[in-house]
Amino acid sequence: MVRTLIAGNWKMNGLRASLQNVALVSDQLARLPDEADCLICPPATLIREMAGLAGPRLHVGGQSCHPGQSGAHTGDISAQMLADAGASHVIVGHSERRADHGETNDDVAAQVIAVQQAGLTPIVCVGESLAQRRAGETLRVVADQLAGSIPDDAADLPQLVVAYEPIWAIGTGEVAQPDQIAEVHHHIRSVLTDRFGPEAGQIRLLYGGSMTPENAGMILKIPDVNGGLVGGASLKAESFMAIYRAALGLD
Ligand code: PEP
Image (cartoon, rainbow, N blue to C red; front, side, top):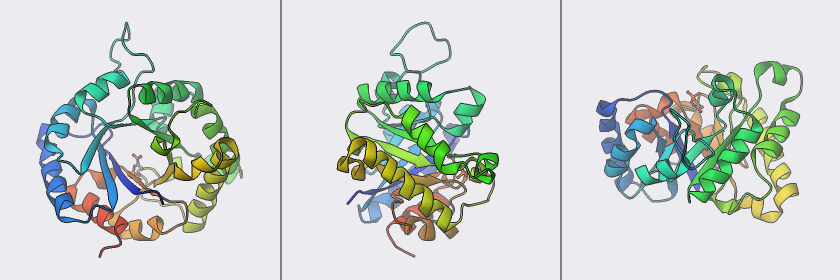
């Protein structure tokens, strides 16, 4: 049985004043049963301070990294640097990185290796565009992304996380229907099991795309959904913790 993971992606949002939310999250986590994992991935500028405030139940992660360890890459941050700042996870291959920075499956696979070598857990994002869904290409696109973005020698499968994030559902308020989520998560599990064997059952599969306190309970009950990657609703402690409580089956 894999543990549910509720992960927040703050994207390019948050100044030091936003860390007051972290104190609220940690405080609430301390009062709730320790039956699901909780992670926030803030901008890199906040990782170190957030890790200092997080307490034992809240993990802190990065939103991307360079595949190299160090060197002449102005503006980039390595996985080792994220680990040094206090991160335990790194999101890789988010559709916004793929779109804004032209990151390819090969780039993402190299990041996965760098993240694992730094002793951190990669969260590999996959998901189709609206045009691809309308063209009936969703399952093929997702399978291609999994094949290209997860290296054959991905170490430590239980420490690998995959997030299914249909691009058309990210930040749009439009949530994928339960049958659409169920179909893609089942497909991801079978693709990974065909490739890696039964151990792939331990890879956590998150759904991401306009998850809110209102829809989280329903989404998290879908088979093969082991948690959520939450953007907008993770920025406020109240909505983020309402999603975490839904993961525990509370409320
Ligand atoms: C995301 O940033 O990965 C995301 C799913 O955003 P939102 O929840 O705002 O759609």
